[in-house]
Image (cartoon, rainbow, N blue to C red; front, top):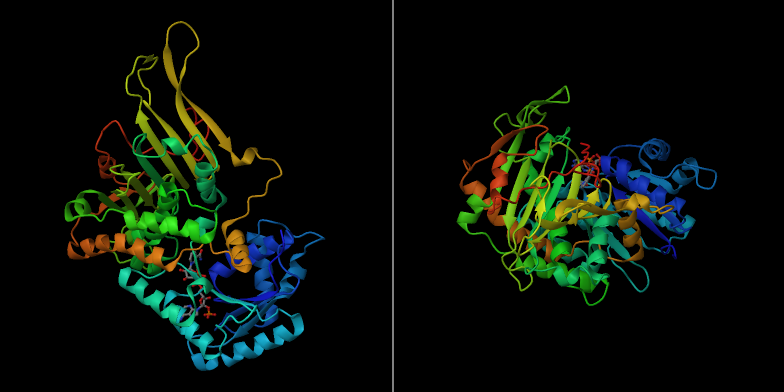
Length: 510
Ligand SMILES: NC(=O)c1ccc[n+]([C@@H]2O[C@H](COP(=O)([O-])OP(=O)(O)OC[C@H]3O[C@@H](n4cnc5c(N)ncnc54)[C@H](OP(=O)(O)O)[C@@H]3O)[C@@H](O)[C@H]2O)c1
């Protein structure tokens, strides 16, 4: 692959967590694979007063901890960090941006980066517009002729429909839509991209991929950790805003979308938008009955005492913020009419796992019995996003011997079986795509707004009915049992996902 054109990557919030844990390690991983151009600089920007040396030293320590690839003679940490510079100024003051312009001119002169710039906003969302205004004041936002300017925005893209509309409309005063790259790191995951490859490069799945053969779709994104030290952020967010509105609806879109005409950004993103436009708005009864929210309580997990959400730092002791949510909803279009999508996410669940389960319809007529009497009488396709990335199909097979007894078996594909294949991490893939000017895996403004249109009534309902049930669940369990009642037919229940994808049923690692 051709490396991107020469450019400078300006990271706002360079003293923060995202820069050290994800961005700079991902850049090193790209360097190691020779995917960065020779004329490439990273300019860290922040209010913290750091010298180039201190910033580089901090980043070298971060590389040791967080880079996937390790330093060696061909690509050494100490050599790579020389690509990094740092400047400090008050980023909320448009009058200070001349400092940035001056530094960029120096870099341009020394490193010949062709005037191409990416501005990565790894800062609190309240600063997105002030920073964009600062860039405009210096004319740094304008792509001209072959010279390009791009801006990368981290989630959250608004905290409700109105704020997302405001954010998009303000950004569009300063940048054109094709300059704006809204990052949802889930889309950078190899296994997430593989959803559309599985669907649209094989003829065996797509004929079954509709209401005639699929009973329901289940998506789980479970975390075993709590909110760590992010109480202040999480109190304002909760699971609905933090996970459901963005990452999980993106997964829904890839599972539910129509085949795009081409594998290009416009075709794929148009299909994503169509899914969001087809989400059936929930009426008051559904808002009450089809959503279960929960909050983790104190418990002992494998002998270790863990605090409940309300005891965490920065959390109101009477907080009603949800750390778990399960939602059942529908997509009103020809393909998915009346097929339930059941999606759940939560913190302090038994393990960290994200997967999609396609539950096919049961065989229409049962003529075989089982040894145990227990048979999942429907096939399942499990798309494992992480860990133990891969695909698993569950189906019934004859038990060898006399008669016709059936048992469930698994057939799987695991990425780990591919030898010598390097799975790039999400930020590595997304940074590279942005450098190459490919927005396919970035969220378009209209899709963000449309996702909020679906989620906004849920927020409004909770605001109007603050006493609406919020169930406590002990840390280390699979959330409130009320979530099981989302399935109308009691023979269906949430899958019990283990860390290991294959051999589940025989051995379950948590
Ligand atoms: N960390 C993650 O894994 C992650 C994942 C998804 C999304 N995000 C998003 O990425 C952005 C950055 O996250 P982060 O975790 O790196 O945050 P962080 O550790 O708090 O760092 C934010 C940086 O922004 C700078 N900043 C500038 N003005 C600020 C202000 N008025 N108040 C506070 N900080 C200010 C700070 O640097 P100076 O003080 O030096 O200016 C700070 O280093 C956020 O929008 C977050 O929602 C982060």
